[in-house]
Image 1 (cartoon, rainbow, N blue to C red):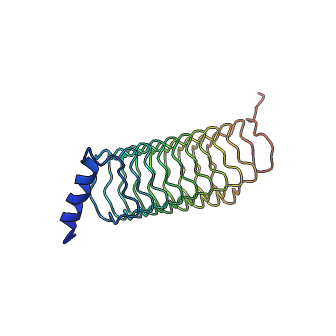
Image 2 (cartoon, rainbow, N blue to C red):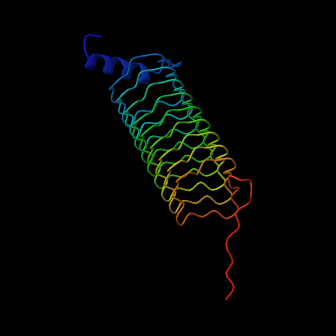
Image 3 (cartoon, one colour):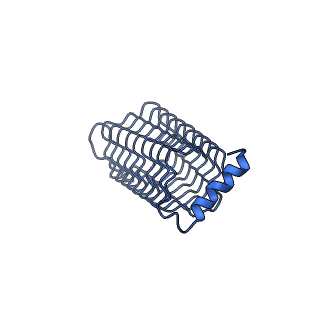
Length: 218
């Protein structure tokens, strides 16, 4: 490729070429590329370099981005249903309002990432690094967060209904107004976590007890 523009055009031609059925771009250098709104369903981007790429509104249903580098990428409102991002690096990426329901995010790096109002229902985030991630008003219903690192994460108003947070690190996490009903917090680290106004009915607490709402008699 002589320049970035030629690289961009070449990649787009490959993606849109009906004869290019395998859609295999594993390991490719796609850093900074603009793929806004492009249908990338089922594409193979294993180990690809997508740093600072623009994938906002892109459709990545069932795509494989395991081990890909997506640092500072723009994935706002991207459709990532059942995408595989295992061990991918999404540090400081913007995933605001993205749909990651059913996504495979084992050991993914999401340090400092923006996940405001993102949908992560049924997502596998086991052992994920979400240090200082912005998950305000995110939906994590029935998500798997076993041994996830959520140190200093912002989870204000997030829905963690029936989420599995077994052995998760929630040190200094902001969980104000979060819904943790029926969540599993067994052996979780809640040191200095802010649980003001959080809903904890039926949650399994770090000591293994079931949280029951306080009943006041007048």
